[in-house]
Length: 296
Image (cartoon, rainbow, N blue to C red; front, top):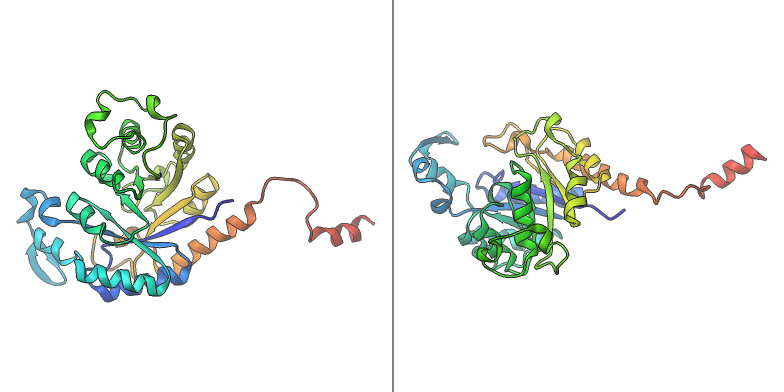
């Protein structure tokens, strides 16, 4: 079994505090995760006009929603420190760009891949721009129809840098051709936290069978065993949000994994990798003396 690539999604659970970000990086590195991931936005672009002036309370302060988004947004000084600190801790880092400005910002760093969040896979301009960076692109499929997922994957597979290339488009026409960029698709449910009866882990096989590409799982549920089960079903990438404490202020903490849970999750994934085997039925090395004793 291929080693599972584990992404610890810090997102905005750092609360805009670089010290909290470093503590979460420490936990991810110590647990054996392969990468940590943040989210990068230009709030002026990403926040709808009608929401910018809406009142928001954060950390005991009253502010507008736009001011809150800037409060939890890291800039170059913080990302320079994240880059330095992750290198020191021996763990990779990346971020999800929510707009073209943020994608351009991230390209000044040597990140291993670009992660497009579920909300943005229908943003064709961002999808094409991400593909054209030459980086591996990973997308999540939460709150998407099958047609939307198929179109996003077509963008990643089809050569060319313009959405006009896809009109008219048909995935079947490009599926056998040369893939334009290295990519992976993460099955996902975008409810925070996700109801266990809506996880639909069988969709991992559906994605693998249809698109013949690398498939992973981005989980937002309370459970840990479901993420281990996703690997058994064929996922080679697992992404989970992490937090210091689920009761912290913010929208993502409740659907995140606390430190002790992250250690259990990574341990469970590595145990599955060791236990999976190759399916061959034969006497194992440890059984040889047992067989000699019990069968004579």
